[in-house]
Image 1 (spheres, rainbow, N blue to C red):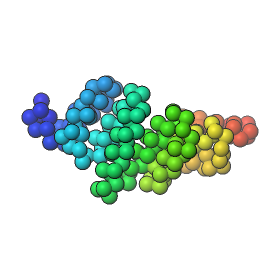
Image 2: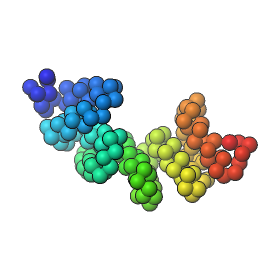
Image 3: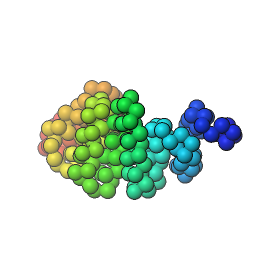
Image 4: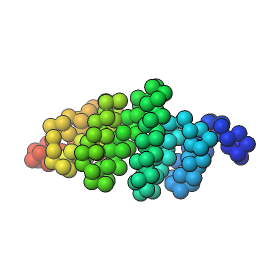
Length: 173
């Protein structure tokens, strides 16, 4: 195993992580990424994979702490606006699941500050606002951006229709 022989080999860790991502083996992915960040603690992408894996495994507290660690590393390198957007988007999703409304909104806003074209954040944030029945004009705009970026995506079309429904605009829904 290359990572055992050369534990600071980023490419080998990435290949191993990609394998378990493809297999959708969350427990193995957690095990591998926990090891990867011990050998390569400055690799913010590995922290993101670990955070996402904890989140998928419903280990919310670990996920949030891991996100914060990854964010601090990504902020230090100053080159990771895309990844910072992904971290904050994931935090928004986690807070949404925890029913922490303001924390979720703040995280989504930070995610969009780093990448205002982050389609997953635009969709999840728009959907969240529509479920809260809050700031529906903003939700409609964000959902419309998703449709503009991916007009055939059924998830984004569904969110857009849902927002129209919540607004009472049934003919457009």
